[in-house]
Image (tube, rainbow, N blue to C red; front, top):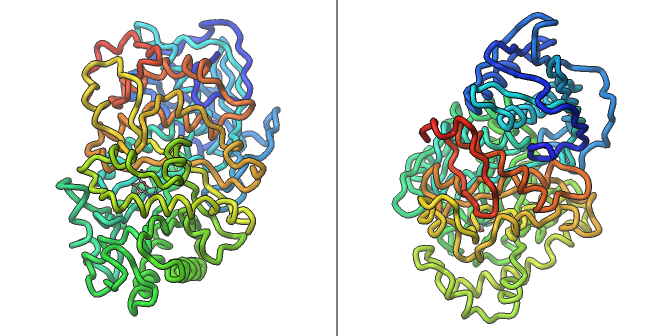
Length: 546
Ligand code: TNX
C-alpha cells in the first residue's frame, strides 16, 4: 500500500526509508518549460509540510529531477471520455522513481509532470519525520488516468466565494489530480460574472445570495486570473450560466424580460430573451478557456415542454454559432439532442427516495424538508413529476449518440449530510447542520461505494466524464465548504482517476488516514469521520489552524 489518492496504476515498492529529503535538497527542471512547475511544487511542499526545498542544483546534486521524455516505458490506453480542453485527451501519464540517489519524474508533456508531482507531494507528507525531513521509500510508479474529465461543480451563487477562496478549492483539486472546476455562476439568488451590455446583472443581479448572505461577482479580469491559476495546475474552468430556469436574478436585474411563465423562467418567445442569451453566450466564449460552456437547463419548473425545448434548441444553436460546445443538465435531452451534445446526469437519488418519489406518496418526504429551505409541500409534487419524467433522459441521450457527464446525486453530490459521527467533538455542530436534509445522511464509505462504468451499464463509451457537485444552500463559509468537500472529494477523484478493479473501502480508508497531516498543515477544514484512523504528523500539534 502506498498512501496516495488516487491510487496509481502500477507501483513497485522497494527498500523502506531509502531517500532522505531535507532543506538542502534541490529540485531541477530539465526543460525550461518545467521551471514554473518546479517552483510551484516547491511552494506547495512548503504549504503541505513546512519543508523548504531549493530550486536548481547541478545534474548530479539535485534530489528531484523533472524531465520530459519522448516515450514512457509503460504505454497506457487513452483515457475514457472527453478532454476538458476540447482536443484529444492530453497524455497525463507519468513515471515517478524514488531510489536511494534521488527522485525522477518523467512525462511526455508538462501536465504529466504536474500529475506526478501531486503523487510526490503526498508521498513526502506521509513520510515526514520529526525534524521535518522526509524519509521516502524506494518506489517505481507508472500512472495514467481512467477518465479524461474529472470535475467538481461548485455553486458560487447560494454563497459567493471570493477568488482567493476558490483558489483553495483549486489547490485541493490539484492534489487529487482533478482537472475541471465547473462554476455555477447564475441562479435565482444571484448573478456572479460581468457581462458587457447587461450591467444590471452585476449591479442588482449580483446583490443577493441565499438568505441574508452577502452577494458578489467576479470581474472578467478576476475570472481570467482564476483561469490562469487553474491552468497552472492543469485544471480547466468551466463557466455555467443556468437558463431558462433558475433565472430569478436575471429577472430581478431586467424585469422587462419577465413573462407570464413565472418569476424565474426565461421565455424563448419573449422578445429580448434570445438577444440576452446571445450576448451572454458571446461573453462566455470570451472568458471560457476551452470550447465548453455549461448553459444549465435544469429544473425549469412550470415551463411547458415545447417552450423548454425551444429555449434549449435556441441556446444550443447560439453556442455552436459562437464556436462553443454547450453542456446542459440532463433535462435537456428533452430537446433536439444530437450526437455532438453533452448532458450532465444528476437525477439519481437513493433507491428508497426514488421509489417514494415515483410512488406518489410524498407525505414522508415532506417531513424531511426543513422549513428554511422554503420548499413548499406543493413543490414536492412537481419534483416527483420531474423525477418520473427524468427516468428516460439518459437512455434517450445515449440513443442519440450524445455524451454523458456522470454526477449522480446519489453518490457525487457532496452537499449530502454525513451519517457517521466526527471524531473531533468541535465538529458536532457542523456535522448536524451541513448538507441538504432532503438527502438521507450517508457515511463516506457509502458515498465511496460507486463505479462510473457500472453507472452507465452497457454504455461506457457514452461517458464524457465524472463530476462531483457541491451546492451551497446549507453552506455559508469557506470552512463549511471545505468540511463538505473533504474527505469525499478524494473518493470521487479515486473513482475518476484510478484504473483496475476499483478500490475497496477497506483498502481505501488506509490511504485516506495518512492524508490528514497535509490537510491540517494547509489549514483545510475536513470532516473527521469516525470511520477513518486519521494520522497525526509529528508536527501537526504545533500548527495552528489559520
Ligand atoms: C438540484 S442539481 C439542483 C440545484 C440544487 C441541488 C441541491 C441541479 C442541476 N439543480 O439547484 O442546488 O439540487 O442538491
